[in-house]
Length: 229
Length: 261
Image (cartoon, rainbow over all chains, first blue to last red; front, side):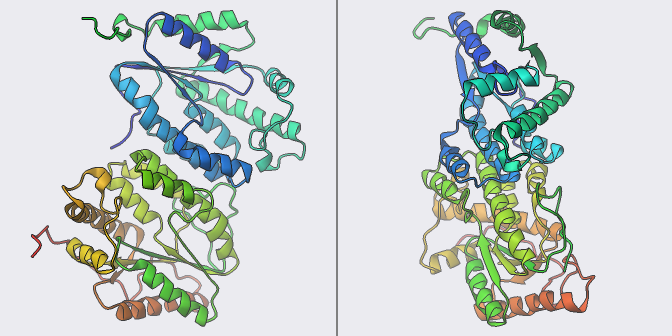
């Protein structure tokens, strides 16, 4: 049976989650730098990054071919490729894997698009359970403000335009992000997500993150220079 | 008109309502003659005035090309492959099959979810996991399973049609055998077992595909005519009701691997 839910691999998996504009990628990049400087072997895995599925996703977005079900399944395909190729092998070898967005992103987005909660969770049953899942929680207004001021043009699916909640892109984006945030809030207790208040300063958030991560680190996880005994 | 019924949770965004068409599935192992029969049925149905949509695996606009490219490169991991196929299926179901059924078409599908489930399970997937994913599938009006008795016979058919063994159809990704022939035999044997297991679960109507094409075609036509006409005679008829014509009560075991002569 292929199901990695209850893995006992020697490596560690830390994931960051949150709405667009919550600052999670910044935090993960800082964590990466710190772990590297401490001498750990660290791998990085991003959402939507499977080279195998990339062309299909790009074409589907451009031509607006997705339905909620195919959006969900193609992203699951992408995630499966990442799991099999980028996440499992380092974990088995005892390395640290950092993931920018994980299955909770799919649960939040797909359910916001009308997919069945239980079905989406079942689809991703093969996923490796993270050591810690950080949820960077920013109030809706803050996240929306960060995104809309940074990006002049919202993308079609990013704004949830396929759901026809509103003709107006920014309005649609707000509705979509609101639904996503509700789903995240539900998942905090369901999956034991570690909530980080994303309105705090970057430094404070990073300190909290490092403190929690360090509890799961061991000397033996450190990278051994090639050729030394 | 029949109410839409799904194996699990309905496809999100699809309104569940009665549909006028018929969803007819032709299942069976690689090389058993499915596509030949789909083509013959299509001609026959159209000659009788029925609009037909035929569809099959990897033909979706969304994912078909991507899957074919990945198959060629042999780069698909096991779980990734199952989900890619599920994406292809969901796209065809929602954008082709459901609209055609609503419009009153006879939808002939060369394979459905059962082949995908069998392929996943023989590759070690959790049978419940793959079944829940395909819970989005519409329950067909009829499922015809073209069955042969032995995998050696399947191998002869594949070779007889002038094709050589395909990498995936031979289970080469599983390392099922030392060479293409052995691998094909071992892999297809596992597949036949899975199909036989699903036969009762999903209500397959088993058709003995060792008979001549003509005879199998005639049997399929009679059975399908019953499905199409049955609707106007008896509104309560469901797919689970076995058709008198084509169901074999007990499925004979697949004989153990014998040395080829």
